[in-house]
Image 1 (spheres, rainbow, N blue to C red):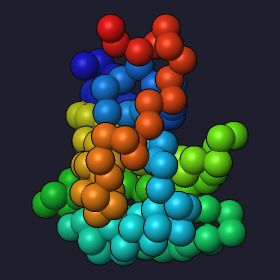
Image 2 (tube, one colour):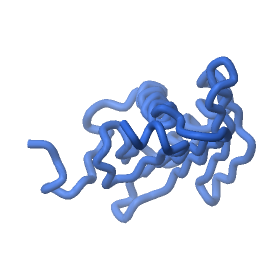
Image 3 (tube, rainbow, N blue to C red):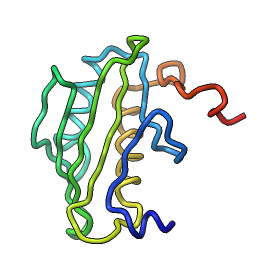
Length: 138
């Protein structure tokens, strides 16, 4: 809770211990995932707008308006291939305001991944759990 009050940023990573912030690894082609991520960031999600994108680098930069102008953020979406040639997506959101974000950026990341799963119609066999075995819930 203290982190949400004092931090104005959040990011996903494959080894995140925070629920919903482990990013995604898909057994779906890069191009399909890239196009879906760009569509979401380009207005497919309310308040989102792409400011830059580079498909060769696999980076989408976006800005997100906050509800009632509270908690606007800059977002960077990274789409890449992992060592097993699976498509990996991570996201970082940094608030453009003073003070903590009350967990808003972490919620944005979770909503983005939920929307991306739906846009890709990704089933359980296509969303891969890449955490080391000891990091997985029993």
